[in-house]
Image 1 (cartoon, rainbow, N blue to C red):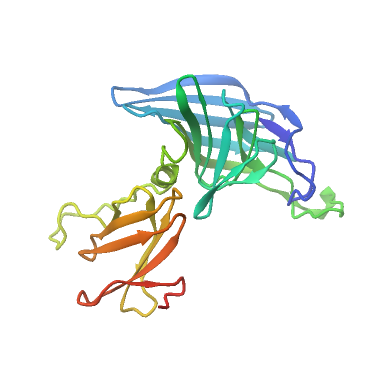
Image 2: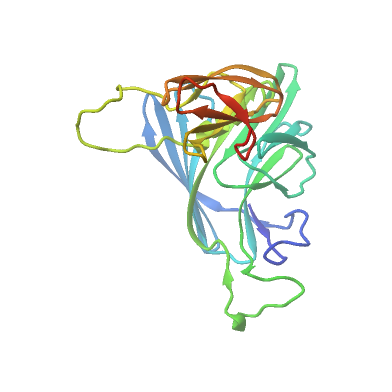
Length: 304
């Protein structure tokens, strides 16, 4: 969807982007892959001086649809949103926030969002929902079951009302040119907690990194984990050398609003970390290099 972006760079007077101007149209379809493990289809559309290409991917035994998006955006004073209409017109809207989640109204207003947004409800068949996992897109709106993710907003940079800008000022427009990002549509049973969206969103956003090297001898086995949380509602957010240089810092967050009790396996250090956490708690642990010393709970400044 393309909407009018009528305010200044920071959108000081905008509550919602609701002045619709048009859509990307004239789709061209191309099947890229149709195998037993994965299918991919490319859809290219155009609007004005811009084009948008989405490569949709569906894998075997997966309910998720992933889209790799390439946009050549050349529109000015325009907002680009991706719209996902659903049947959940009266559903519960939940958005991720740093180290937590929050319910918001479906009133069409622009809201900040982090890694995921979810719309859940129920019908005669039970509770269900659909989530949208994003990669670097941090604003959205929702109304009447329609989830809309804000991709670009393209005003003059840097314009602050009530000042007036003219072409003679030599300003530039934001977000112009070629961009690439991805998102994932994830239908699920139950609500966002049942789907464990905090874990699913991290798996989506933090893609594995590979390093190609030559054959050589080494001390590590063929397979080893740096760190692994055995608790479904505990994510590891930080694993680093401590500020004093004599140990390691492991920071965890409880993600589902529940208590947590168990262990985190620190494969790199050949140690396990006992964890006891309250709902939504953020906990920091100091792991000494000396295995004879116990793990200690510290604060965010790494002080006891």
